[in-house]
Image (cartoon, rainbow, N blue to C red; front, side):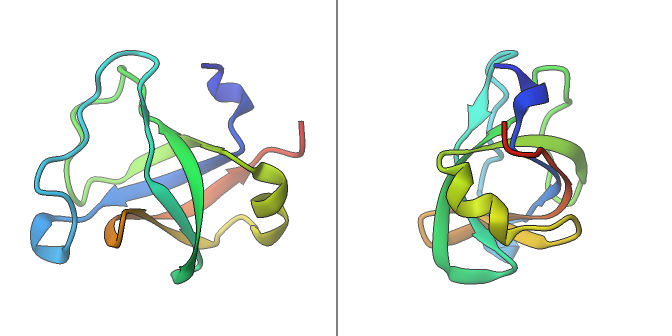
Length: 112
């Protein structure tokens, strides 16, 4: 996976289980691991987008309330989503109806 070709870069923070987040944080399996939550825009949880979050093996274990900076995010349909985004937008990540993480867009790659 070429993380330089990511559609977005996001500062992301996972929620604790008490806040509704995951009981166990996603494991980092290998250097090419992609966690695949659903992405929501600007805290609007009525429209969801499929994405992959590239959590590289070089990162330490994922912990709640620890901000992971510039996490590469790949969108399944970037043409549908990118026009709706700008740097600084707040986004949410969920698994089903469970919001597990929140983030801020720090970078957007122009259309490849």
